[in-house]
Length: 73
Image (cartoon, rainbow, N blue to C red; front, side):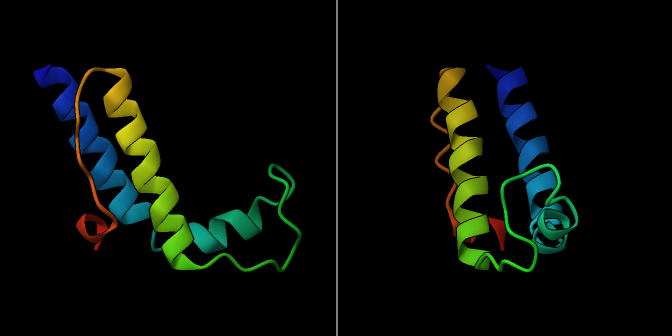
């Protein structure tokens, strides 16, 4: 379980960094996703998806990581 917690913490650190450039990255990569060029995604939605995904990974490995969007800020 320690390895899982270390991995989740590493993913959280990357999410902390990524969230600041997520909008630009999503727009730049519209050819790889189904967003319409110029479409804007609210930061709170980006944060919600990041947190939900990290918690999902934790649960799949038997860890209730209990990450909240406030933990990304």
